[in-house]
Amino acid sequence: MRFDRVWLNARLATLGGNDLGIIESGAVASKDGLIAFAGPMQDLPTGWDAAGRIDCEGRWITPGLIDCHTHLVYGGDRAHEFELRLKGASYEEIARAGGGILSTVKATRAASEDELVASALPRLDHLIAEGCTTVEIKSGYGLDLESETRSLRAARRLTDTRPISVTTTFLGAHALPPEANGDKDAFIDKVCDQMLPVLAREGLADAVDAFCEGIAFSPEQVARVFEAARTHRLKIKLHADQLSNLNGAKLAADYGALSADHLEYTDVDGAVAMAKAGTVAVLLPGAFYMLRETQLPPIAAFREAGTHMALATDCNPGTSPMTSLLLTMNMGATLFRLTVEECIAGVTREAARALGKLDEIGTLEPGKFCDLAIWEIERPAELVYRIGFNPLHARIWRGQ
Ligand SMILES: O=C(O)CC[C@@H]1NC(=O)NC1=O
Ligand SMILES: [Fe+3]
Image 1 (cartoon, helix red, strand yellow):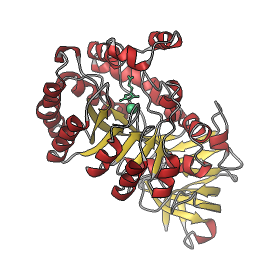
Image 2 (cartoon, rainbow, N blue to C red):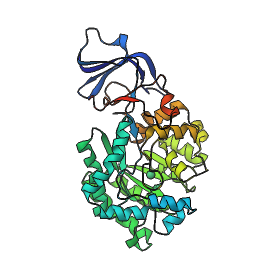
Image 3 (cartoon, rainbow, N blue to C red):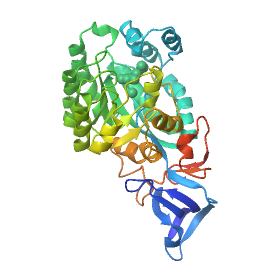
Image 4 (cartoon, helix red, strand yellow):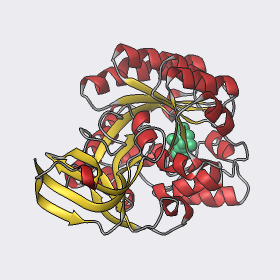
């Protein structure tokens, strides 16, 4: 058997099954960008050969990390609002005063596609430096067809100059733009009848998302977006129950969403509905931390119900200006009390599930893309335990 590359003398955290899937004296082999073998070195086929042999000298190999929820493409920044919040203004007060998302909308509408690409690249490079091999990027700061199109094109273009997989999500129902003059239903009509069909036809969106919240859109308005997504055969996700319980998790589950995200105010019924529907709970501790939220997501209910749980940075200029999946894991453990296994699975196997791509990425199993992160650590817990330290030794994307 001839492989392209073989990584030998490694300790594997395959994330296969429902745990870390640890293999102590392991090897991974690639062929044409895919994993051709992942298992005990002694099980490598007799007489195997390879163009490249890498001695990992006992280092750990995990699947490449996956950030399944980011708003990475946007103009400007919100540092000034950060100062306002330090002086006591709430996130909702700032939003209702026309700041928040809308100030980023103004900056994004004013930015060219090249400028959107250029400003996103440093954020993307930070994720890549920590072993990220797939990133989901939402629109949602354009809020009109031309700006949403420009944002999603910019997201797609990031793969032109970086070795990373990008999935895009149309988040037109993120906030009400100024020109809507307060008419949310008319804006939802535009999202569903004008923007979504064009973006679907042009293949610019892999999924559709919405913000179901008092300061954003109602469950009824979100349901209209979901119906339109279904018409155009696009998968759905939802920013749900972040600041209040509008039963967003249940709504997402009822529509068979890939994921419902945030979920601080989700109740047991929502957790059970998600488990039954296979809708992944994407937990976003960066926003919880930045907003100094005190309502914890119902982790015990998710565990009890069997709801899959993922973790992501929610990288965005307002509530989570964070580009570190390692710090995200530490927050998931420290703030949400997730276990080490849940954290590492949350940014690999479960993040892949949240993107509907578990058949392609997220575990070290033959037939999946050979996306690897090789770590200078003695035990997997170090990936979650440390704060502000990056133990990445090497990152492999599609076997390279
Ligand atoms: O503040 C921003 O720019 C986005 C905030 C982000 N979007 C959303 O729906 N919830 C969030 O935390
Ligand atoms: Fe978000």
